[in-house]
Image (tube, rainbow, N blue to C red):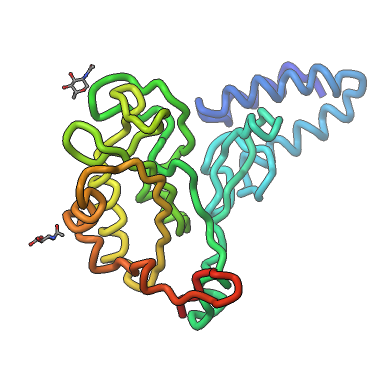
Length: 243
Ligand SMILES: *[C@@H]1O[C@H](CO)[C@@H](O)[C@H](O)[C@H]1NC(C)=O
Ligand SMILES: *[C@@H]1O[C@H](CO)[C@@H](O)[C@H](O)[C@H]1NC(C)=O
């Protein structure tokens, strides 16, 4: 089979977002499958198939639409694999283990610096110059099964802000948004999903009087708050064992 014709046919079936992948595939074809036209034919057929069928976790893809439900077509450069692959299934629901276990018997997906979304502009109007950790908004994370959020809270501009900062101080270029906006996203989610349990881990740089209490109260989240002080402790380990 003539590889040039294959490439032309490819171009007609891929969407624009697949072009980057197409280039990677063509490079692969040229580098590794050149010697055998028969192999090239087989590779071509299997690549064509993946544009037609839904594909599974870890398989190479061109766009989200290629992947099975619940999967996205993404690269993960951090894992050393620059090819687009179907990634990210929804984590299993902690409640699937029953709802009667102590708190410390559950596990759930937690995101670090949950608010530090890639490409997010600081609400101060200043470009963010700090590390970004997430691709999804808080609401999308919750909808995708995240049940733990790690939030860095600072006194900033006469309010409590979420910042990915240093030295215990927030700056315009490390500030993302006022904490109340994210807390309200959580509140809206809990209103709609009252049987879910969300754990918020605060990296707390707030020193203003009652600062955290005020912002939680103003967000409407206090009514869902399970105070740590009410959490029973196990005598030997000191671990929280709320039932
Ligand atoms: C930081 O942002 C605030 C809000 O936009 C602005 O009022 C202030 O002037 C900025 N500070 C600096 C140092 O740029
Ligand atoms: C909580 O909010 C209510 C009104 O929404 C207010 O009356 C109350 O004083 C607030 N409590 C604190 C501790 O901020």
